[in-house]
Length: 180
Length: 102
Image: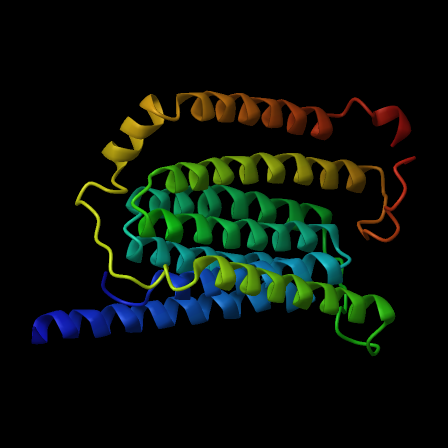
């Protein structure tokens, strides 16, 4: 019993640290004036999200998060930011314009809408005790589900990735040199 | 389930989505808009995976992995656009890019 409550407290501490660093690095992403620092802050955000996925017994998704996002997407971002060079932007200076105020109001309204909608829909059903089997979220289980129940989504995702890769190559190729 | 209830995860996901939406609306640099879009996608992903855990339904995790692949595709095309814009010496400010005439 003491061991279980100690484990519970440990999970709470890990969760609080992960949630705080997730939100703090999210704020950092949108508030740095240098895009390079924003991309670096996104790494912290993705890492703390991976910790929360582990707490939710989604081991494979956490590993994929670190590999795909922190490994591939952020590296691509950092490369492009270094390629286009420094473009400083001071988003929070010069006083609030009507655009800034409107954007903040729209984002706040969106957040309130989400919270109200989820709160009304959930109605207490999100807080009852649940437990899952030991193979929930493991790579073997994910692979089995992907190749049986969700085969169509798997195949369509591969086609979308191929199309995006071809599109990226076409956009980045030098065929527009005449107009450059 | 040890630790906080799923409702807490949903709250974090909602705040992350709100922060990302604020970044998309407020920032003018195309690259930072793309980064904020990643925040929004991650907020949605966290909600999907938390609810997948709550109802023991693997479809949420499958959806999360699919969202990850779509986000990678989106970054691929978006950064390709940024590189193409930069090569033609166009501004990366989304306000001056409001017309698609090039």
